[in-house]
Structures are given as structure tokens and as C-alpha cells.
Length: 398
Image 1 (cartoon, rainbow, N blue to C red):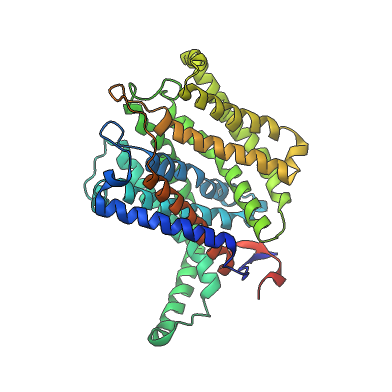
Image 2: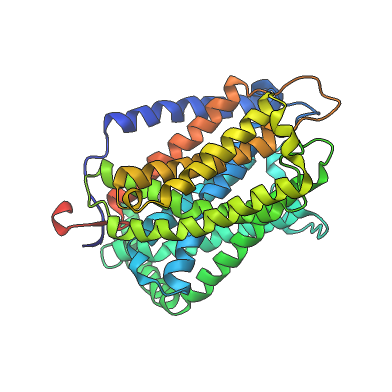
């Protein structure tokens, strides 16, 4: 067993469904750039951030945390047992952060000016730190992914037509780049972990400027710490979800010998997040809002109960940790809980006092988000089919 291209049938009914959502998303994006952002969204001056920030950016960044948490575990802490899941986790992170940037391009009013933070530094801005960290980390992810591409194509470059004259040059670049990165990759792995910790927490810091707009159940001085610890807590469950879906889809080994020990780490990390979450609520006395019975408090209860407490209790039982269905269910609840947390902070819990209208995404916003998610899944399937990402027996390749 080693990482291999699966070389299985690519065009399946599921892929065609993805293609439909991709086309619908592309049409909505064209409408956004031709008719303006107000043409396809329900955003306003009172609600300038909506679905694209809450899901495409904040949730996307959180769920891509498996890349840096797995790299830290396998390469920095030396737990080489987890090496087989580092490549799919890295691929998920590469795609996740790529589509975070694409989501930002669609969301910001002047998308052609997205490069300006690189030259106009506002060092007092938390958003500046997020922008720079995400930009640098995305390039670090591409560098970390380069050896996978080099492994597949070096010595086998065969460009078509007139481009065939470049075969030797491309092959030389692949070999030299792979050899150099093999010696200095540790730098990028450490840099990736540091950058991730910085912008994961800074996303929480963004909402500290809105004490009168964010509901007290979510507004807290330790919001950056909660964002960081929840990213750590969701990293490994996201790997479990992604690995389980991929191995089930391609009929590969379930890798329970790796995923079961990984869930033990999750118990500790999720426990820290749960302790901080409940402790903050008790210290600040915000538990009194739990009895209001409105949609905001109900959403908080669902987030805490089903997204944190229930999966944490489930993982305490050894029978669950050794069950493929059990750990997938618990991991899915954790992933859903962190996703709901980001949606709650940026959308549900955000209610400007001078705005009487409750925000709900327009169909165009939903189509853009679903289109981006479908595109991410489409590229993931393409990558694992033709690149050595997943662990597979030799007979799978053709």
C-alpha cells in the first residue's frame, strides 16, 4: 500500500450532478460581475457580510484546518503512523484555501483591487493580517503539494504538439524543484502551521469590533482563542470525514488503524474547546440568554449540544472509536458544529441594532456557494484519480 493514482472511471452520475451545480454557480458569478453585487445578493449597508463570508471564507478556512494539524502531527511531532492521511488532508487544504480566495473575489466590491494589501500595509488592521496570512499560506500549500505532482510526472512529461519541445525543460524543473524541496520542506511545514494559527485566530478577532452587533452568546474577548481551538478540534474530524467518504467511494481500505488513534487526539482537543466555551458562558453570565427561545439562542443550543457535547461524549466510548460508522458520525457532527459556529458568528448572531430586516441569502448567493463546493469536490475527485494522493493497493492502478 502506498499513494497511487486510482485511475478509475471519472465520469460518474455524481460527477455530472457536480457539473450541474458548477454551471449554475458560474451563471450566478457572471450575473454578479455584470449586474453588480446587489443584483444577486440580499446584502445591504447594514448587512455587508453574508453567506459568502460566513460559509465560503470563515467556514472554508476552519474546515481546511486538517492540512496544518495533520502536518504538525506527522512531520513536526514525528507521528509517522499518520503519514498516509497527510496527502489527502493537504489536498483538501489546498482546494479549501483556493476557494476561500475565489469566494473573496466574488464577495468584495472591487475584486480587481484584491492585491492592494500587498503594497498598502495597514498594520493596525486585523483584516490585513488575515489577508496576508491566507495569501502566504496558500502559496505554502502549493509548494507542499508540488512534490506530489513531481512524483507523478517527472521522467514522464509528454506535452502534445508544439509544446513537446518543452518536455525536457519541464522535466528538469520537476526534478530540480523536487530535489530542492526535499531538503527544505521542513521550513514550509513549520511556516504553514504558524501562519494557520495566526489567521485562524484572527478571523475571530474580526468580530471584536462589533460588540453592539453580535449576540452576547458569541461575542466574547476570547473569541480569537475559541476560533483557534475550534480549528484545532475540527482538523482531525475533517480528515476522518474526508477519508471515510473517499475510501467508501473508491472501495479502498477504511484505514481504521489510523483513524481510531486520531479520534483519541480529538477527544482532548474538542474537550479544551468545550471547556473554554462553557467556561466563558458561565464567567460572563451569558447562559441567561439560553432561555430566550428565539432563533439565535436556539441556533446556539444546537451548535453546542449537537456540534460539541454529543460527539465528544460519543468519542469517549471505545466501541464508537473502533466503529467506522461511529467515528464518521461523531466527526460529521463536529464538522457540522464548527461550520454552524462560523455561520452563527458571521450571520445568525450578527444583528445590527439599526437594521430591522433579517438577512437570508438570495438564490444567487446560494448558487455561487453550491457551485464553489461542487467545483472543489470535482477537482478533488480529479486529483485523486490521476495523482498519487490516496493509499491504494497496486492492482487499483492501470
